[in-house]
Image 1 (cartoon, one colour):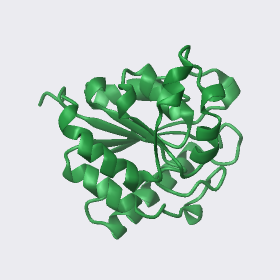
Image 2: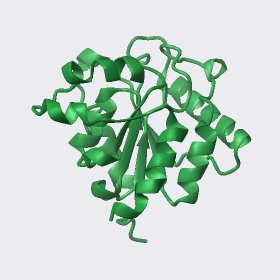
Image 3: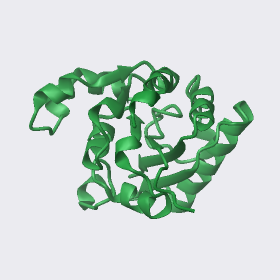
Image 4: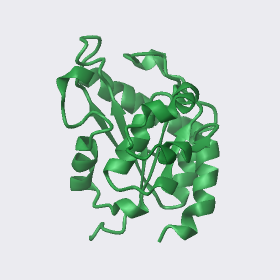
Amino acid sequence: IAMKDVSVVFLDRDGTINVDVGHLRMPSELVLIRGAATAISLLKKAGYVLLVVSNQSAVARGMCSEEDVKVVNQTLLNMLLREHPEARLDDFFFCPHHPEDNCNCRKPRTGMAEQARTKWNFISHNCWVIGDHVSDLEFGKAIGIPTKQRILLETGHGASQYERRVELSSSANPQEALHIIYKKDLLDAVKFLLTQKRNVR
């Protein structure tokens, strides 16, 4: 089956779907952000493929293993489905490297999107990215997601990132940093996204 018409929403994990507790290492530290399961179920009903892309440098720091990250991701899936039977995430991609490793997969670099594209043949123009860091938005920009489809959340690190958005933006055009779409939480962002969907084609 040709997958080229797949529309993906790229989601950050910590601070976007679940509470950011610093370096999350074990399932017992998982707490869903209020409304996240509902938000994910709404995206699934609308036909989006949901891909989680997250930087997990705790692996490189020796705080947990890649297997631990996978166990946390599976637990997150189970928690979402318990809260809402349609709150299904389709796939997880994570960067286990240290920020100083200069890898290609740590956001805002595009390695995780390239991995995802081999499994989900998406068209970037039809995709969205939602996260709590400016680097999430820059990841979206780097893979060709339009500005109007990149959303920064107030949850997690989002509020402090929004305050510092101009200095944080590596964009040559500071005006772009001033026009960031900024929403209270994932549910707020998804409600906004679903009102825009018809304009994306």
